[in-house]
Length: 381
Image (cartoon, rainbow, N blue to C red; front, side, top):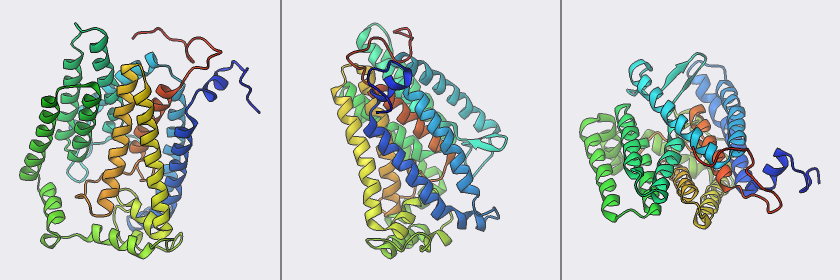
């Protein structure tokens, strides 16, 4: 073996304590994302006047950064995870506010901040940071009953959700509310609180339907396709039919030639058409494996902070994947939500890598022969 268990170096200690199943599945999804980007994005780039490999180069750039973020974060111990998440959440909220005032308007939304040669969607980084921050304060309430941990967690959720609605980004709003509800279920909150969150979600959905024309249009087209243009969903379904079991082969698909968002929102349709239903099942199996493995780890976790964080992060990850795939097969209204690690999108890739890095850090178990954390830190923030 290149690395001995007797080796006391930082990397050796990390290698023998990291969850290699989660790490392997994540790297496989990242590799699949690059392969699918190579298949789907050149026609999109050509249609909008860019050089054919523009999106592939951009995705590779963000992928390198994301892998570094994932690995660096996975080395941190729990006190540093809390510190980093709190700072990231606060900074992301500030950037979301700045995006509302100074960010460009894209498709009627102010979600991005221009950073020279590239842009950043701060809410993607805020999502995993919010989960960890809320979990931390809820866990502190258990440890110190006099601390207003629940109120701080509710307040954090309220501010985050308000900024998402202001952008507006109703898909991400629903995802955050459902994730926070899952955290509260694991925490053991009364059902009236859970039903209250469900009521907030339903109320926001009604308000969005009544006041935002494109939301109403998407819902109406989903419920009654004859009321409007369903070109994107129809084309995605046709792509799955064309692909069959084994697919038309790399480059043999036609959906990417006509779908405007095929490299992001409808990347799963490209998988179905060019690589077939079997490839779709493999990707779904990887997502399923990650969700089940991390939930099992959360169930065995004695530390409330780690259990809540793991459950929240993997719930958000799994729900986002399920929503994207559901839209691709017309089981859900179109939401413009990426498929983690598969769809094109630098901010989404960074945010998801941050989430998995935190999961790897929280899942890490010390070896019985060693004492002390991987990276030295004080026990509290």
